[in-house]
Length: 480
Image (cartoon, rainbow, N blue to C red; front, side):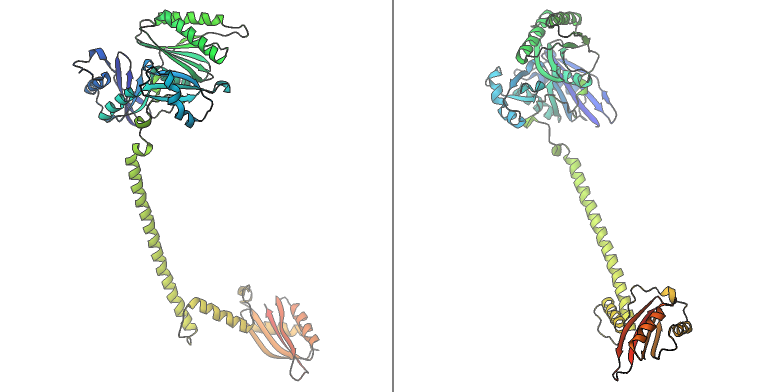
């Protein structure tokens, strides 16, 4: 994919914007523009901070060649819930989801856009993990970016998206806790059997590193009690590079690991791992064309990404026009070939008519020269009692008539009374007619003539008594 897209990271304090150029081989990230909402000058009363912030972003980043965007929102603005439903059809789940979530959302009159996926951990529970974001926030993002001629393709929680990206990179991992830490929030994601099963967000203003360990304990304990899974978790931490409390957070995680080790029933030994993954740029793996499993996306309904047809309308239209042109050229080529063949057929018909009239000058009315010529030849062959279909003339091209007569004389015994009345030799075929005094002589002559190497086949075309009744008329057809 080529072109560029805009990446925006939102939190309670401000936003970070970066234009990322793409080519066929790699990405070229631009300079990050960091804006604190507190620094926005002359913000009008009631104006949305994102709206005002983007007005400043366009003054620092040239977005003229950008058409799509990926937004990472704070997990503190997203409501995560785990539900259990009696059916697994995604169509049914999407129909009942707003009603099922209504009692769990903080404001009854607040419309939310929700996304979900089925957990189904070990097929023991039909659990569904959901994420909901207030619709007015999605509408604000979409309308402002549309004013800039940019289409948001993905709107997703930042901490949760980082966990999904980390899960895809680390294919050897199965069950663990992923902790995403920024200056304003902690995002805790519990992963079981490579499926995110629980998500919780904590504000750093209310939870210090000490309270973080308690929150980890409560989250793990609540998950174990709800699912009855006696699981121990490794912990992986993503910490922003500019976070000054990295060491304190590590101590908090150590405290949690010590607490978790006391939950071990002794049935198995586990190695508890704390791994800092702050050097991995996890969010950069999520691009407009990305289709990651389990990734939440609030671009839904009227705020959804454009359909394939709308997105690529110009390319489809060009392809359709080119298709029509190619079909027209193909059809024109076929018509040209047909006209050329018609001319060749007309020329052959003229030649056939000329040959027919030269062969049968008495025929004045000719409808189809070829068929009539074929019928006349067939009639002539039938009249002559000949069948030339399988006859090979090359075998008899050099046979002389004198040799044929000599061979016949050898084949007819002197004691046989025979009179020859017709001798016709043409193109390897001999028609021999005559008379003898009895039928036995006819069979005798046939047998003796067949014994000659010169003659391939001897057939008695006819043998009958003459009108006086004292002679037998015969007719032989002899193939050379």
